[in-house]
Image 1 (cartoon, rainbow, N blue to C red):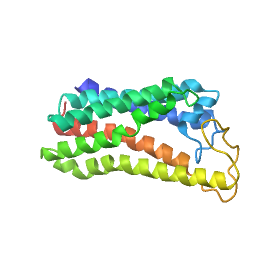
Image 2: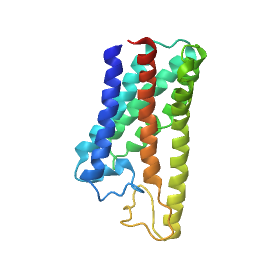
Image 3: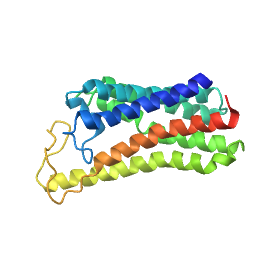
Length: 215
């Protein structure tokens, strides 16, 4: 269990490092409004693939870790959802933004994590053993769905602004090179916040177990 726990932390760290590295390798993709997956259209596809693979691996390893410590039908369902989220992230690396299966990758990887994380959080808190970490666990679990809502809202506002400026948006449209005046373009920041919240939850859960039980 200890090796598995540190593997989760290592894979999460590598994923976030790869994401950070992309900002230096491809500065032409402005982080305020370009999605992380769009880095696949740049010259360093290996880095974005590395990010998605390690991000997905982190969630799958977290699911494997939790499989051995949770009980009950709903908790097991939650673990499966977290594993599916990891599979979706890995698919996001294998099928980049230009691939027809990238949308399926998003559908598997993004909506499943908030549900799974919340169920696991309240399941663990219900045991009474994790009361000292209640605030940390609740904050990290609720941050996931909040970040998803923020990204959805920021994307809608941004796309609406582009359309009003006469710039077509969509999967078959070339991304604009600049943001027109008056367009609130913060979708990229929200996208990166989502990744931090999703990946951070894996680390928080493992940290709590390491501290509580000293595997």
